[in-house]
Length: 269
Ligand code: SF4
Image (tube, rainbow, N blue to C red; front, top):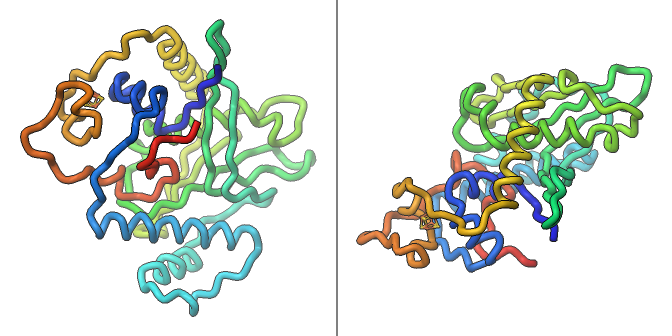
């Protein structure tokens, strides 16, 4: 058996083991209430913006004149005006990566992530590096918060461990040559660049392996003690945690488009 862990699955397991088990192992339907119209529209626009940037980095034409939505157009124009400085290298937009994490008697644990844009050094003549770019259409967050987010920790750890295959080099890339930049449409002139270090990677990898080992050993999948988490969880009835009044659906993190966030249906086996 193999278990694939994305940011969504890691955060679910760390928040509530029962929820992780019901959603990702039992594959019970995830019957979220419909999102507010405004939030739904923001997510849809965020998805379109990511598709535009993918086209752009694939070298295809993106015509601002053809954009009828004024917000989308303003995001695109902001990007064109304040595009972060990109290193020379091989551009890999919307790259999906899977990285082995742990193998036990019960099976394998793999990490999975989808990068908005990865740029890696192209020739063996230049200093090897890997730089991730992540486009954000939600509320900006400070660097310190981003550094501790599982998206950052997971993506940087995956890159460090998979760099040999991506760059086709004999030795893995030193973590110090890996970075991630978050670029926000609402603060286009203030990208947040986080550089990775060997010490951070050692800690991240140990933490990820410890989480996988905990999953491997789990048998009773306890409910969270944090009742606030249950307020927005569709599995209340499975846990005896029904609330008297259903709160409005919780907006996705930062109200930002994130490809893994939206699975309202059970994930296909
Ligand atoms: S209702 Fe609460 S305890 Fe049950 S799965 Fe959801 S978050 Fe966990």
